[in-house]
Image (cartoon, each protein chain N blue to C red):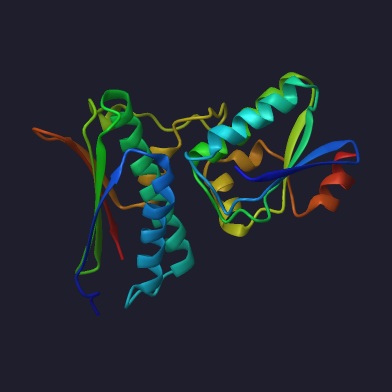
Length: 112
Length: 140
């Protein structure tokens, strides 16, 4: 799983640098986020601009991160979803769970 | 007008690195359909997703039993019916007992079959003498 981590405005921003999140790399993403949370990085924004495909295991990895961040009084939000990726969150009603922002600026404005 | 006959038959090792290949085949097929008046981009994503989810399930079942197993996937289009079959050699399961996801208390797993059932027109899972077959039909 190729990704980049940046600290911005008090948030840990994960830039996913894969076009595809599926059962081949979602386990790695889940472990990465869990590791961050265990080390106190509980306010996380996942930037999905480059992702054009996500499957159920990818949604599961993000949901795992959301639940674990929330359990430590943190938050995991999403930014810059492509329309078809967004439609997966809608189909599973996970758009009611995650805060999903158009871009990072909107995320910072609303999460501040 | 009907699409001409198309038959794809793929056998892969039970390794998740091949999911991209299988999903991409579905995506390409959707984009190259001769006569399809619906949302082609949506169909491409859905076929990619359904093939990915079905193959993931088959890989998981097989890996538990016999790690050096293979998964066979066939895609057949004729008379505007797209038929996908995924063969696994695991213990099998009863499709009817798989519940819908609980949307109020979402869990990390169990969404794959929900996608297949929601996005396609017919889904059956049958146990045959030497394998199980997940058959998925989409009317184009």
